[in-house]
Image (cartoon, rainbow, N blue to C red; front, top):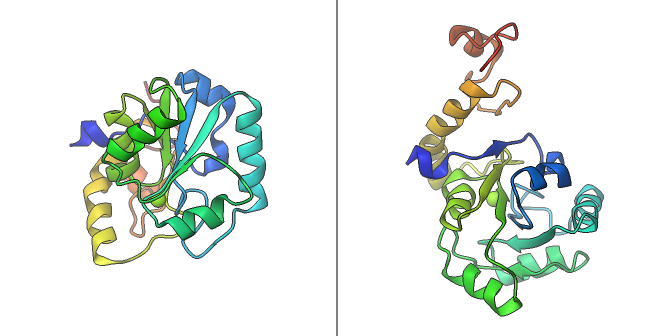
Length: 194
Ligand SMILES: [Mg+2]
């Protein structure tokens, strides 16, 4: 399971994704999650930072498609000022509806990347599509039982990633990733990886 959901790259915030980074992973179409990746659930409209980031990526010639498991009204309202191709109720990590959308829009199904906050949906989707997974920590975590369960499953993968990428810090609610935790695992700042 870890292999399927292990991300190519973890970043601290969506705006850390640059055209250079996308080119490094040979991504020409970036499938972007909305909730907890670009905005908290309760935020109906994109922030100025989101708008600027979208413009910046698009200006570099890289396509952005919104892929959300949220409902049509949520996705449409969020996308109103962005005007991006968008899939609501996408059913990710299922690929059926997304592949059909890309085909219908004439978007090549090569050079795909996914940017999202969840390993079990966004990262898995990326790998099913033969693409790269770029993952950010959720902006604000919904503490429902399902989310807590998913976080538990994801935790091992996140910890495995953090062992090899000191620059990445995941805001676990517990002490994992804290300086004490890193020290215990021999991951102090003096430690040089690789
Ligand atoms: Mg999300």
